Length: 65
Image (cartoon, rainbow, N blue to C red; front, side, top):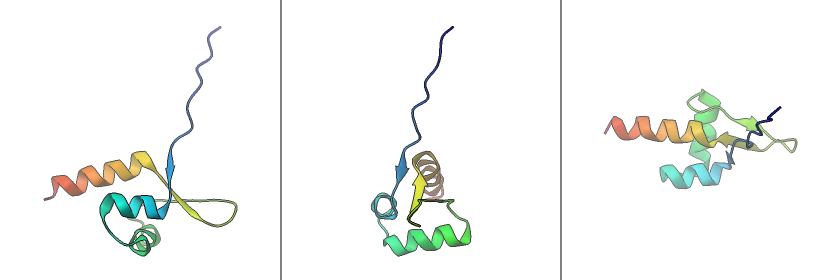
């Protein structure tokens, strides 16, 4: 029997997402609060964002230009 091991999804900090979009990290937090971008909370209460979702949002934003 062959087992497939899935790699854990890459999670980004608000600062990393902000650097991708060239905005302030607080803007990324606001996007999460209004539902533009979903976030995961760490045990310490910090937000993390799925890289795949961030890349999809970036692609959609670039298409709209």
